[in-house]
Image (cartoon, rainbow, N blue to C red; front, side, top):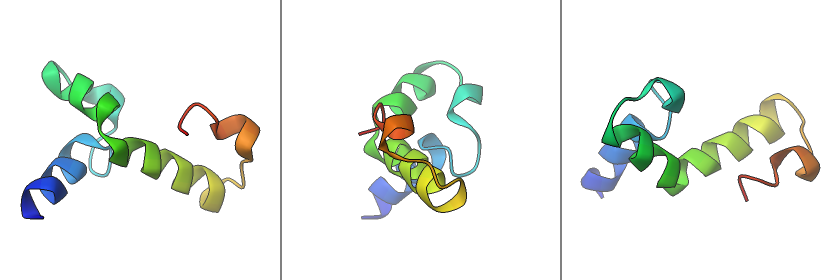
Length: 58
């Protein structure tokens, strides 16, 4: 559990945006499911976006 939490925090955009990651971290961040979850959560709860705006993250 700790190993997956560390990756989620480092590569999913919780501390630094995924676009600022370099090297292999950028590709890990794009593939890791936590990035898509955070994008959907922020879009729905903070910005009130609908499915049409967030369908790429699904």
